Image 1 (cartoon, rainbow, N blue to C red):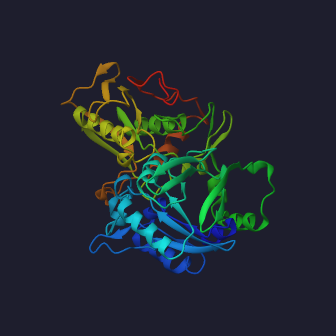
Image 2: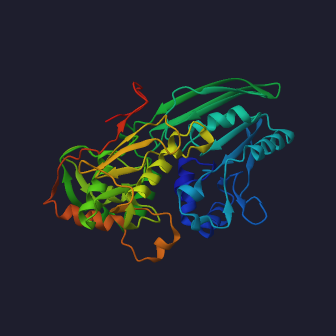
Image 3: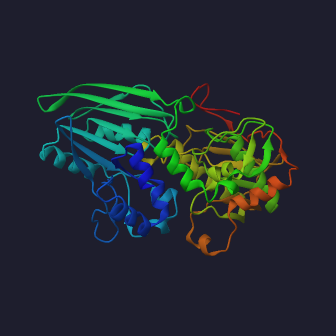
Length: 418
């Protein structure tokens, strides 16, 4: 990881999925492997007992003769969106009051430019920019937005630029500042597309990747089936790649309904391409990818869907966790993204019949956040999906994603409806 980051030219970073390696491993990487090479900054991660900072909140860098502060903001909802036990001794949160103190301190130490590396997500970044003064630009992540222009947000101290540069190395965000008299007077921002297939491979990076992959290459490259339709993940409510996981979970575990997390990572396959073990791992590989099957009442199912919907569509960005809606297999429902909390999910039906609040249903899923799951001897989800693929006779028919019917939010080109 360290070698790859250095070859990419990474000097400073903040965190998100790294925390699912567990506190001990994260600290080992930061304190030992990153030492003197890469700065890991996160002003909003504190110890649960005394609220001491776990990581450096920011670093100072002189760039072209200009003193710059680079502040870190790790994913604030880590203990909620991911298993709490991975970070049991740490607290997270947005902490914009503390952010203001950090920015003021950096300015007092001579920073003429303050940049925030954020994993808040775009909407949260926009609100934070309106509340915290003194940040020149927020270079954000988490929601995978490729923003061709910077959003300019006014606040009590002036203005803050907010950008996101997409995901998966598809773009490179480049921000240039014109600094005069100790402050930013102008800027240039470009979102540069990375046409990876048209660029020659970097020899050092190619050698590193080859060496790291060598012990696993044969197993990863094994073809499990061939898809007859496009498999993708990124849809607000579902994708054909997620539908494949849902169908497999229901079929293998004999469940009536299935849930799959609204993860945004994962690559796409075109019709006729092989489904390799590497693609399956690309879609499912977390440190807690246990497959589950439980009984839930209709009331509980609605509560789960309402809770996720509120995390996504709450009108206050500080209550949004990013990501996409939990993917649902077997169950039909309507969703009003603009509805009130607890009233966004309606008309839940299974096989054409209304879901009964008191009836119990068999529900499959994976990636549980509950601590007891890790000691329950549950199979990893990829094992179940591999079994399902093996039963397809070498081919997987095109998947039709199970999408909710949207109400109250249309017409709106920003939402994908059924």
